[in-house]
Length: 222
Length: 219
Image 1 (cartoon, rainbow over the protein chains, first blue to last red):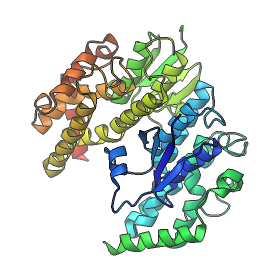
Image 2: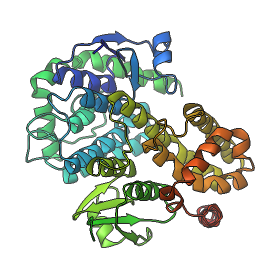
Image 3: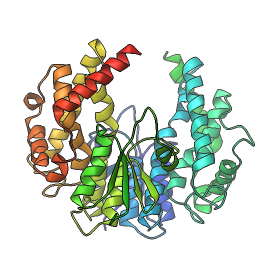
């Protein structure tokens, strides 16, 4: 089938989405850490359009954009499916993956800015959490968005379970108040306790240092 | 209704056009309901409570939202006719990549070319031409983005052809001069009945967008 390589950066949640998918399906791969301040020829060749990570290279064929990579992995390796087989349920899952992908970016605005811009990021983040708490199917009834097993929606929302906490600690801004989103809180606990996820999460204190440094650099540059 | 399909739509929406093209490609009957977005129907709000947007496809009473997700759904349920996605996983990934590229860039920038003025418009125009050139590079001399078969990338992009007159007139430039292969591709798509019947006339669209522009500027 050809070897699998993953170009990523630590501790990017987008890289982790792909790592989780590969691990859940038991697919061996070579991870190649990228330096985004000095992009490698391999990265530029594999993703000439966006020049971003993650990029999956399978048998020499590059695939870019984390959600597209997840769908490729799902198509190529059907074991331990990440999407339902029923077309309607699949469409619903894809809707939430898209929602998570687009709206999830709000939490990073809380990190990147201060003052009014940060307020705006916080407001958007809260709206996103409220929508998920109220509307996401299966939440509160099943262990994961994917049902009894982790699925693509869980992977897309994974950054809420781990990275959001680092952003909150570094900025001192509470995005998710305890008790306000009970179903999401339960999901976050279930997600992080899953054996595959648990073994593949960046060490919190190391991630905290990176996130802290990122904020300091960004604020200093303004 | 034979196929039990309802489409909540807006005639001017490029996203709605994508769904209409896909339904036509598959030869499906459906009920078309035109929405008034300034006064959203209870049906729309019930079927898309999260985004409250069109298009929404309702199949046997169940809603599917987001245009490209709807197109993929249609393709999967009615797989036997005119497939819009290839079956090979890598080819599928490439199709999804380019459809996603169109989704992320063309609408927002195009809107600024017909909707804004001055420096913002100029910058948007330059960016739009850049994105069009990348897309032109990707389709090249092929009949369609996926090769010989009309597919999801074509479906994702061709509705924006209805914006060409507006964008050229407001932005004062010629798309065929900048991207001749892209225009050849667009004209080839327009030869398909599914496309020509789903896209409004470019001049009608121009008048409509000018009205919108006036409204934005008044705000």
